[in-house]
Image (tube, rainbow, N blue to C red; front, side, top):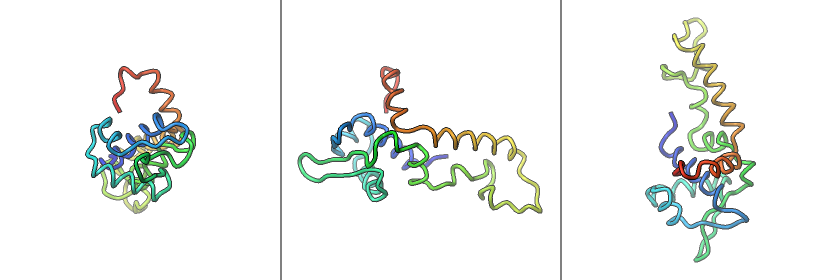
Length: 147
């Protein structure tokens, strides 16, 4: 499972990918209102993403946040790995340790084979899905999607 921090980061970057075109910066107040997220919590997440170079920020009356790279250069994988690490893509579904740490002298968990395949497919989806792809898809479903 993704952490709430990661889910908020995904939503915020998708939002910025959609609405901060041509270097436009969007203020924290507008982002938090539009996404219905706590401004202080979102602010901490966005500042972390600035430090990780996924976002840029500008202070002042015309300041705000924007993407640190083009939307087609930021994948969902980049965001999840930056915020939550690789555990989402390596952990066993019902175990506590990543499958990579599995003791080969012991049997695998009963869902390992099926889940490992699904987990690999999910990883491919996250790697291949950029903010640009999502932004383009939002246009098709604007009446259904609330970031």
